[in-house]
Length: 229
Image (cartoon, rainbow, N blue to C red; front, side):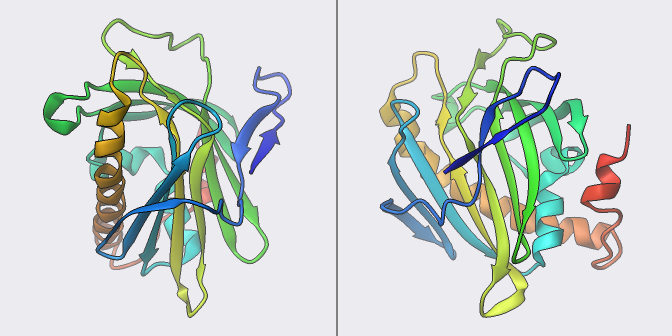
């Protein structure tokens, strides 16, 4: 399920981004490892898969979504990325980022770059959603250095764990078109393990961030971060 984001005057007036889909049923289970579950089904957006990833974090929903949203921390813990930069701030909840990935599968998948519109929204029940989708951005046209990939509507849904509201359930949706001449079978073979690694890296990263911030003191937050010019 998607929701349009209206940003008058920005050129992104009807961008459909993901909102809680309750939570996209009928996925085929692929992996269940270290309390991380990856499942998939055929995407309706392109000739590839929509992946759903679930993991539990011993953090509040607010702290988890704040950590995932901040671009300045991303490459310090996300080992799949070489670059993750905010290149344009649209408003207090929306920005455009430029991402460059590492190579995958022992070099079988070369680095890609992406230009994504990222949108943060709070819902009732202490549910936070960070959604994104690739867009065209003239200031960062495709480069001969990288194949320009495309992210169809994807994102994170952070919500309190029902049996322990101090902890959070993260549900992540990914439908990435790697483009280029890459065989779909290579993507399908490597994506589940890469998504599990993302969750494990995020868990390690938020522990490190908390320690560096003073044993759990979270400096700033979603609102204070976004007020920076």
